[in-house]
Length: 120
Image (cartoon, rainbow, N blue to C red):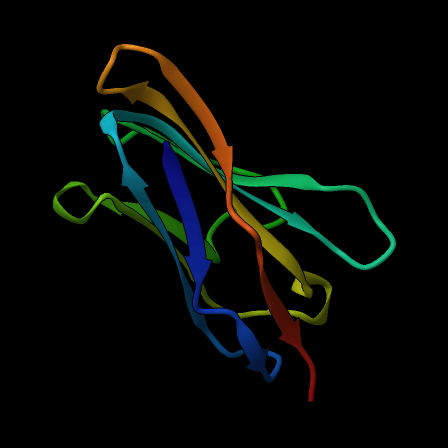
């Protein structure tokens, strides 16, 4: 069984910064890909950033140059550093992790989400 837990959300003023964490635990053999998604109020969930096991990253155009995704393999944790936050970044942020579990099965699990609100 794999657990994915997000943390680090909160209320921040426009122009401010936050760092979200995505901790993956359980019977993990590998963490291959981790995605950060967000779902603004009344809108569909959208992909924000991706990081692979080799460290390759990809970002949505709306967050490029403002957000940075990184991973700490020793802690099985992926971070999303968000700078220059805008009101339109307000959303519930979700983490999705995909990889291989110790009995060679695969997993594709979501966290419960963390709320980010950007407002003055």
